[in-house]
Image 1 (cartoon, helix red, strand yellow):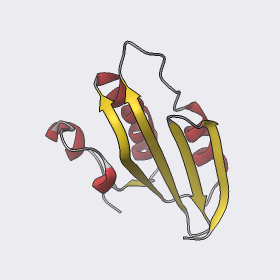
Image 2: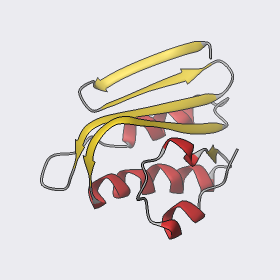
Image 3: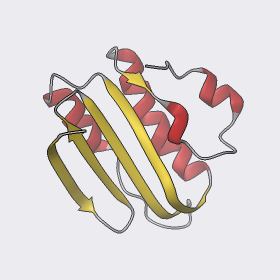
Amino acid sequence: MALSQKTDFTPERLRFQVSDEGTIMIMVSGKWQLEEPLPSSDEIIKTIRTQGHIKVVTFDTEKLSAWDTGFLIFLNKIISFCLKNNVAVDQEGLPGGCPPSFAACVKSP
């Protein structure tokens, strides 16, 4: 995957990379729980909106150590935007345990 942009606006828990091929990979790590301030999805959504060539969103949650509904709220904002804007969401990288009804609404690439 050739990278055209890499952004680290909260490098300890949230990073993303945009490829020249039209994929944005969202990498999350650490704890994503409601009791802590969580990174916003706004920068990712802004990037998808302004980079007109993004067609697929992928996730890397390998370094995600703990999560609750705070993480699902973050995902919901991104996935809802993608569904409304014909951007496919590859759910392969989402952590095990995401509710089946949540994952079922996601379009595969």
